[in-house]
Length: 431
Image (cartoon, rainbow, N blue to C red; front, side):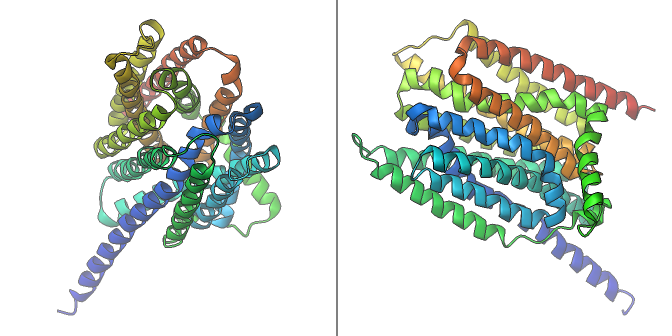
């Protein structure tokens, strides 16, 4: 009887650990939902509400340029502070950006955008590190395939996260629909509600368990000397660029940023607004968010390894390719019922593609780059934010036609590189 006692205790401990892992995924996903339903809706409205001297669009360009630059050092900050503390620090920039919109001037928006770029780089590297570490721990404690758990956890996170577009835009639609003339009361109330949502998200994040990624991957201790830290930073920044796998993925990362910025900067301006008016922007983006969330949940469940990721990414890229080709060759603004439906159909299809890229890229990085998770996710955000910033800066200067042709070329190049990566992985697995 005594010999069996340790087995019972060990089994009970494993069950407790498994519950903690899934609890942390629920908390992380819910926190990001509360934070980004606010930020996402405000980002969609920036070019509409802050129109003087293109303040809104330029602020977003500055934000993503800052995001790109600070992503180079984000992995070092996450290693030093730990993923949980970095997540909490990262929320402060989003709160400040929303607050700056209460008094939008160059003196409030530019500093807030710069700081949000820093905060965003921290929170996203920390998110990727924390979620991957949690999935690996869960797989180890429950004796499950690592790739399947990483895919499942990413599916839940991105599914709940993607619903921010749906919920946030419905809140915007409800609060702004009553705004009349030059009144700003609806906008002020909207920002106040969003600040409360962000505060709740930050508080909820404090209940996460701490995850010591360094213990699992053998990363250097945070108490290392400044010299060692700088060497580690340079390694995590430069070393991935000598990895053929990373070089083949970079075009897909850049395209994932392009297709997101296309929705925020081009889709709403050239497709939704002419067909549905300004009030239709929130509705179309809500449709986009709903399909993004559903797709993320579904494809996360079917992700089990490189083969499944290849099939899902190829399908998502094909959907977006067809949409881009149709917009380029066939689409025209139509005031009839069919013309009103078209923007919603495009939004739904684009949401499916975005859900595919978000879940599969995160799962792919978790599977391929186990020994430098922070550095890998930093590279993900560097190239994503660079492509997003480029779109925001170039958007006022290029036509929709040029953007569509660029996007078509980008999706073809990125998919070719990704398929080459999977062929390389398939050949390597045979030997």
